[in-house]
Structure formats: structure tokens, C-alpha cells
Image (tube, rainbow, N blue to C red):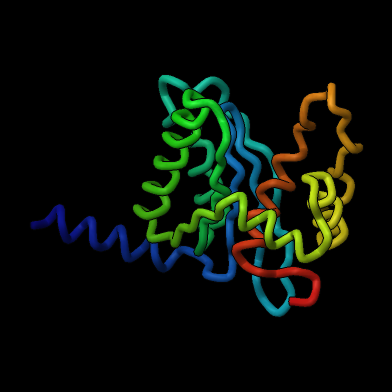
Length: 185
């Protein structure tokens, strides 16, 4: 009984310590995750952004979860938004799925609301602004959030691998889509 009461106090403390105006949007990859922290008030503001590397977590996805949990500690988000990946190999999807499940469990343990945004919803949202390609989405996000503009890499050529910074824009796209905060909102 004492354990249950202690657990209830921990849960209540966690709920009080989150910032309902602060949202953490994530783009999860097998070895790293891009993130943006958005504050939603009268005007949506970008508070923080970056990429967390956690290395090869195929056999121990908890390492990736711990790197993201540190963001929970630092920013105390009231909402976590994760973009759902699709069309990848089974092994990659398993790794991403394990990390995602761990993040969702950790967020729920801390009484943080969670939402998963499908890639098709991101495409539909940015389609209304004339964006068809990933680089166009990143470009419009760089316009909306001037702090990200310097992170915008040059347009990728077909023989080039994706720039490290694109994770930021993928995370931002998921967050903006979920929060429905285009330029007029």
C-alpha cells in the first residue's frame, strides 16, 4: 500500500512539472533522433532544436530512450509528438518501433500526453502550402522559424545521402502538422 501511495505522489509530481504550452516533436531514426521544442501561445515559438545520437541500439533500444528522456527532464513538455515512419525495412522498423515504444512508455510514466503523426498527414498539411518534396517542406519551415534557416542544407542531389540537419526539419514538420500552426495560425 505504501508503494502505491508513493507511486501516486510521483505521478502527481510529474503531471505538475510538465509545461502544457511546450511540445516536443521527434523524428526517430535507428541511430539518432531529431527534435524540436515548440511553445504554443498566441504565436508558436521555437525554443530548442537538435539531433541526439545514440549509436547502434538494435540490441538495446533503451539507450535511445534515455537520450530522449533527458529532453523530457530539460524541457518538461506537456506533449510529445512522434512522426510515424513507413516504407522501411523490417529490421529498421523494428528498431524504430522499439525506441518509439520506449519513449511513449517513458512519456506516459511522466504523465506527458503523446501523439503519433502519420507521414501522410504531414504531406497533406504541407501540400496546402504547395510543398511536394521534402526539401520544399524544410524550406517553408525555415521561413516560418527563422532560427532554423541557417540549418537548412543545400538541396540534395540524387547521389547524396540526406544531410544530418534534415532530421530537425522532419521533427518540425511533424510538430507543426499536429499542432496545425501554419503561418496564419
